[in-house]
Length: 212
Image (cartoon, rainbow, N blue to C red; front, side, top):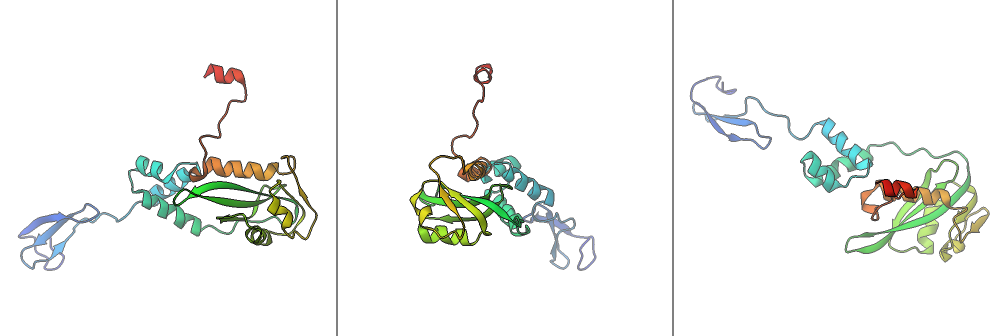
């Protein structure tokens, strides 16, 4: 039945619309209409599933292949989801903060660095940034965005020793005082596919490796 002239005569199929619904042409008034339109786009359940898969360490491409969608759609869903998230809570008091960075590649295989400052007690990321070079200005700006801590630790990268902390600071050549930030960075590499190296998995026991 034509929604314009209300007649049921001379109604013929006229192709499909972009969502796959059948269109009809009314030869009485030349109106093109869709009697049973399908909803455009993907369901909220599909979008949420894609976000959950991304959080579990799957790449955009892998998610797109599994869900049979476009990779750009997955990227858009993840971006929209993260944009609507509330700000991450920060601890009221920070006793010890640890500074570190991890490197990855972007664009034309250019090396970039993800700066991270982590609260030891909660392993909360106090501040972070992505920079092309680990300059004193870039590190200081990242430090100033974090809540003030009572004690700071970093590895032996020399630029850390040039920063103003406003509290005692210690540079270490071992990982005894930077284990929390190292663990957070390892988690980032594990759960964010774009940061992953070959694998974080390893065998803790020799017999487990032999058994597999």
